[in-house]
Image 1: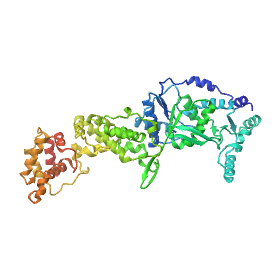
Image 2: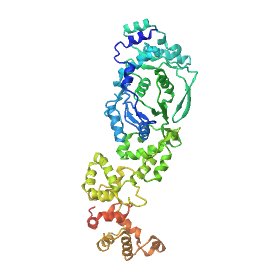
Image 3: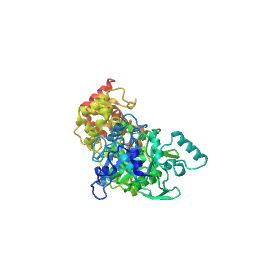
Image 4: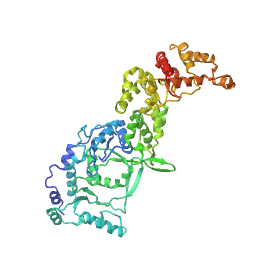
Length: 547
């Protein structure tokens, strides 16, 4: 076979060669051990937790090594592409604060970063493979390929285009030329040089040394529309873009011999592959892969609607990434993802169990470490987008809101009742008169045993805003003792018949009357923020039946 003639026949209008593109995309000048990683989704839907996890790992390794993290859109399967798919991917990643150094809309010296815009590059590399005798055109129709599969199944042979079934290998230059003159559709296939009976060994960054059958399948490199398959396109792109490490799901593990074979046939050094185990979910006694279709926690839209902060999600993913991160984070109040060294060696080989309860626990810890001002600044965008009415209340008097958020935040054990941005409204609405007066808000019932006149007398005649917490509490106990309430629970339990209740009973009344709840943060701090005037206004409102 005259491979030069074949290459010229198939690509008569090729403008630039492989060598031209290699000059256009020179080797990156980075420090030693710097990683170049990428996130390369297809625009076929929304970003889900599994793809976010993979992108997060790639992002971390690039950043901690002083390397480059880029976004590449793999859209060569255009039949599966959804409308505005690329824009949706970029938007979803931006919302999760995954930042790229290069990519669509960002730019970079190794673009275009959308595969459908790199068609000529792939043609140049296929041209090079044809010159070397490593690729050829195949003209089988869809019906002929289906018939071949039926024969293979009947004969209980492996399904695929290989060995004696690879009829395209046997075509002469004249036969190929005749097909082209007849305008017969064709694909370009790899002339695989492996043998299924031989084992192929390679080292995975996570799973270690792996033995798989060597590839003997003549896979498609270019489809009938001239666009490449994923198998070929990502190999060319990772080479030209200088990718050093590819992090991807282990569903691609079995295809790795094909990809490494392609790198060898191109005569270039491959990146290192790291195949991550899938995120799983436990349902009773069964563990299965986290599902986009069935599991709410797989969709990023769920986290956005619930108001689970992006940083909390990252912190949780970091615990799945390297298990030792969790101890580091929980035992160090100044812990941050950027100050922890992640390694492939500490990644789990099996599936990682996704635990939404633990994520929410870590979210509470994250919230508890923010200052009131930081929390205020973080929650505003969520409410501006999802609850404009409450946003207006929050921003009417920023200092008042910040003082509310600061309750029980500065002590040794800061409050941990916020797991989501939505929880903030749930646990603070009663501090805003606009919501306190609304009958639609859910509130604890006022029991018949409660004594509103007692509470009114206390706030009118005893309560003093300038009292310290200790003085306030002692004065409260002294006051209630005059009305047959025990100063302590212990005192009450010694002779319950002698008392109407105890100091806890009175605090419960205050909570329900003024804050509409049986559970609140520190009463003293809340009363200080509310002020005596507003307290008395609320009590008068209750007396008038206007809550």
